[in-house]
Picture 1 (tube, rainbow, N blue to C red):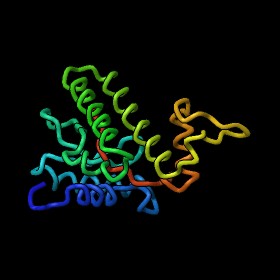
Picture 2 (picture 1 turned 180 degrees about the vertical axis):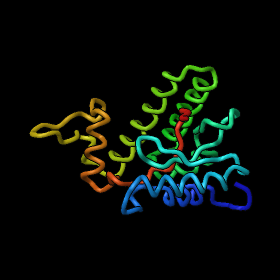
Picture 3 (picture 1 turned 120 degrees about the vertical axis):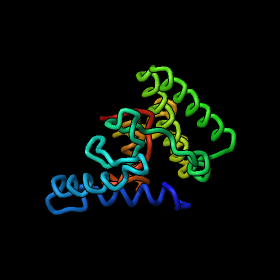
Length: 180
């Protein structure tokens, strides 16, 4: 988007404008706003679409109909303050590169696995780095699950319970999938 220095902030704003949670009647008003906004964004070759009911900003595909999502250019800078070490950051960025290679060669299933692996590893690192007690295990009912055996669902539940994420967080970030 030409003329702005903070693409992430603009992306969040555009998604929030189209977020069904912002409207009393939900998706019907949000979708009308999204359609009008997208007509204005045509020149920028970006569009807001819904993925799992949440607004996401992506590039308009070469066919003019599909919306493509990819890692933001500043992903490394965005996650650097979240991770425990520079070495781990580089490992995550290698996963991003591998995922992009999969996507570029049509291996979309592998790309999805890469996205999941990136997300799970980042969440595990953030949780155990910010709360060292979790290095001894994640509470699951009456027992504790070793960090290396914690499921993604358990990581998400723990993050929600500890106030790290919320169910209604506006997710206006990118993934390596395309959506029509």
